[in-house]
Figure: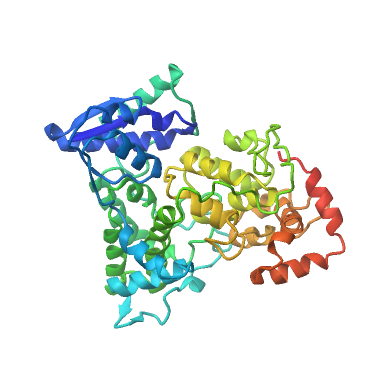
Length: 484
């Protein structure tokens, strides 16, 4: 067996140091587990390991670029079906082809639940509905600084991690790579045994609180009740069926409430599975010609002077370097600090803080997708396009999501503990203490109104915007705002 370690995956763009550590640690732990059965090949480029090899057998890689390289440079290579998902690519493609272009995640999720029998009573969902999301939107407990849960299960670093860290240090010193973010102790599972331990700990300790507080954010509790299993799932060391099965078993034994279990199952067998298949179904052209929603040409300058080709704003330097030192909005500062320190945030901070900020300010969707891919430890080529271009930035015209995920500061105030200590007031849209999310929301709607006026889900907010007596002043204020 040939196990290829190609350094090019860390040199194309600056990636998070923790992400590089995790990926190399996973690969080298696998080499160690295979022992004499594995030939560990270290190269600069993947093609260097493929050229001259014959009669290889490879599991289909998880990106279009890698699949193209395997097929182009491999000789007489047998490509096996991809792994790590609940539904096969052929099955999803056959189903999607018969949907007439309308293959919503909810429909895919219901189909998977029925097929697998997860949380089902005969042909009906347990609890009477496939989604219990309405029960899983509680704000953080009033006055709490943490959820009061024990720390998640953390892996124990070993000599493989020591070797990885030494190699990454050397590569940086030699100028071969450039990383962003910090490399703290390893906090994510990278082997099957570690993944099993992390899953068991989550189900036993955190799953019960996961559902109610899955959208809540506390400054001093970066993990909340989340599983931290996205890394081992995306590394292929945890099978999604095992994760779903453990959660369902907890419900059936009375150890976890239905709403929490359903929310966890929906994240894995619903959204994660769906996004993987969208990556292949939508194909190479998805995202090739997108631009920021409501972008006005020519594209405005970013704070570092850059422009994007599609009319959106280039990412500012402080965003790219994860330097939140001068950022005054607490929610944004806490999110960027979390990315810097851990390379991980849960979905509300990604979607409703970072994504919402970028959407309101017209950041270039393609640059933003690359950034999310590079700085998040669970970021992959297949994960981010539908999540960022489609769901977060609504730059695909509604292919993935039915409306933009934009919100003002009141939402952030309700779901986090950030606003009480912030110099900005989430209830104000004008003045020196006007919240940049609240004011930015209305400025965004004014800019994007021509593209959104036919969207029935945006009728009411657009109506509210048109009735605002101070809209012109808000738009001018946000156009002049410089952050940081």
